[in-house]
Length: 125
Image 1 (cartoon, rainbow, N blue to C red):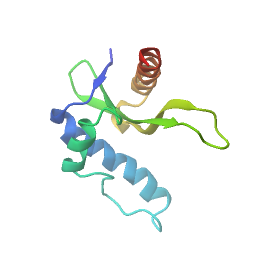
Image 2 (image 1 turned 135 degrees about the vertical axis):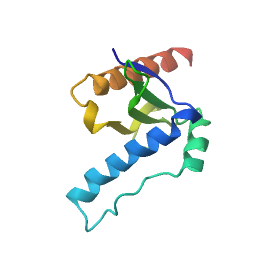
Image 3 (image 1 turned 90 degrees about the horizontal axis):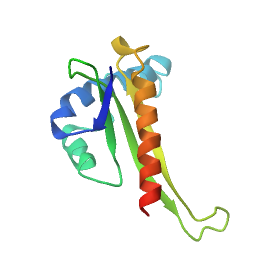
Image 4 (image 1 turned 90 degrees about the vertical axis):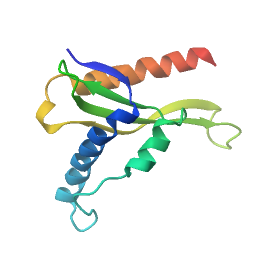
């Protein structure tokens, strides 16, 4: 059974591994545009993101407690735009499931958790 929770500092090494997998998907598809293997963030940047409530990061663990996926989110709010209505959204910036864990429901668990979190946040404000 997969378990989704808010990411913590202890998850940074595993999140870095997953970020390399994300990068390599891009690199393998477009090596003319994407370097590989690299990560979008370094450990220090990840620490700052994890501490920022406007950028919640969630991880999915398997039964053994191994982080097998992540979802990086960003709270966005538009007020007074000439085209858009005043709206507050939660944007999924990046979602990844470890190649070895695909087909286990981890992606669905992450997505469902993000949707529930967004609904909770909407009812708070």
